Image (cartoon, rainbow, N blue to C red; front, side):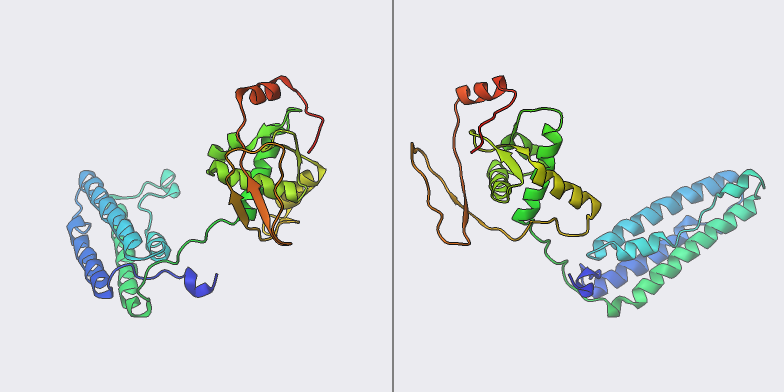
Length: 268
């Protein structure tokens, strides 16, 4: 993604953003930080400043497509109470002065943002990128490892779908990808798996170099064929670059057989 696409853009009309920020600067007068005569006055002014500041932060988050300017504004706040106050008891005047300085710093930042509005493009945020099939497969590989590391039995990938935020079809497609890449050990019951040595190596490499592509993972597209009933038949792949996922339905006996078995020795 380019640098420009990462920059915050105006989510509203430029004139609307300007008028709303100017209004918030005027609202600072209601804090009355210059009229503090007692600790109660200070506490009340701090509470008004807090509400004013939090509104400003929320407004900036709404005016722009990213939090760049909201973060800049948040950084302008100055603390009224600091650690050194434990050792040097500040006067009421000192605390009030700190509050005034903090408000002035925030106002200065708001004015700076207003001056830069002409330089900020209007428009919506870029569309988020869709998760790729290989990314889903890598997440499934890690989940299979986590769920089988303390047992000899395989796991049904459909059981992992909710925790991964994927549909059953998506985890089945991811299972097929991992099987095609020889990253999992598969069994007579489709869509069950354990890691094999190759899969363990890939996960370890991915953990050690999280910013690098995992070895063996490339673009993949799955074509799905829904078969309602088939016995003793097979499906021919169409083309040298095609892969496909087949959905099958198992009865209670199949699940019972899997539960009774601690280890399934026959691989596909």
